[in-house]
Length: 159
Image (tube, rainbow, N blue to C red; front, side, top):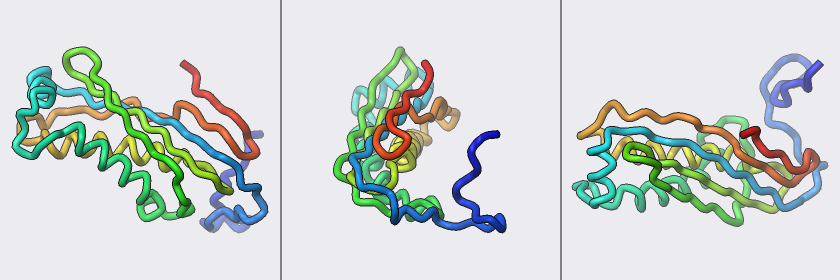
């Protein structure tokens, strides 16, 4: 049988997981996702032809801010002190931008949710800034790539 869901108590009520007895360790998580758009939309982003400003630069700041605000968005997520967040955006082909986020802390719980939230917020910011010219953009492939630290150790997603 698989492990039980940790956010429910013995009576099935939702609760915040108690991490008081966990050791403080360095914890790192890396997540990714893509936004697919029309080629002319990507060309405009790369040319800086957007009245709202530097799309990728603003998305990077938004992703970092999203990581910092994760506990405000995910009800049972612990607020944690982040020691580092990096958000990288790469162009793939003529129609795709990939966002990869690395989040780090020294603490009692992992930073997977912060990395995943940052990816979503970064991609949503690109959507928001470009929706006037391309409402059909598609966000996809959002997933955890890797995590390390804590009791469960190092985990890497299958390719």
